[in-house]
Image (cartoon, rainbow, N blue to C red; front, side):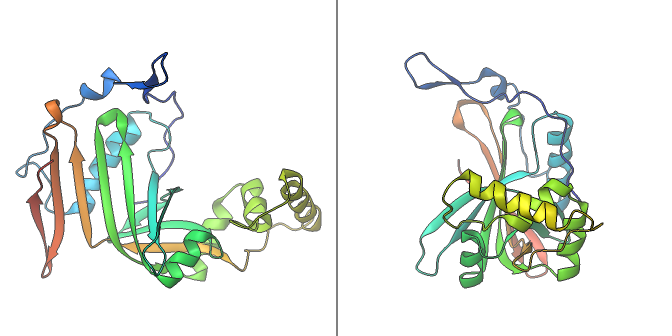
Length: 232
């Protein structure tokens, strides 16, 4: 399944009190629907696809956005948002500069976790597993699908490196724009491409009233998926 962005709409996120704290967004609790074992699909990928389609249909902004957690070899964690560009066969695809912090951590410690948070539906999905680089052909195909301006940014940006100011970034983009002005296709950056996370564990989290939330975990039991309930 390849993700496509949903129609952009205003976020229904938390609202600030005058005193600077947060108050509960009442619309979330309107979606306190049960997640019962007998209703869950035996295949976590089909369950995720069903939830994703509902998230996309709700017109929330970027339902394909997920938090990606990685860790250094000594266990220091880091976290950032990425766009998951699709999944099939339990493999989740995202793209980045291989010399970025996430790229370096995945090279040294090739395991990661993804978290989709669909606040408007009161849902989260956690996915964990090993990560490997995508093929050059896959990376090139995705790069070619992007707008030229996005390709120029990926080609020009020394991601996660210190730069003097924004003007330096804009200069690098302008130089590459001029260099390849007469080229039909931009080159694929040598240190940029895809990653593939192979899911070994899923957790589906559904908000319920009074914080007695539903949590169903899928984990491998031989060749099958075993579904277990966790206490909230």
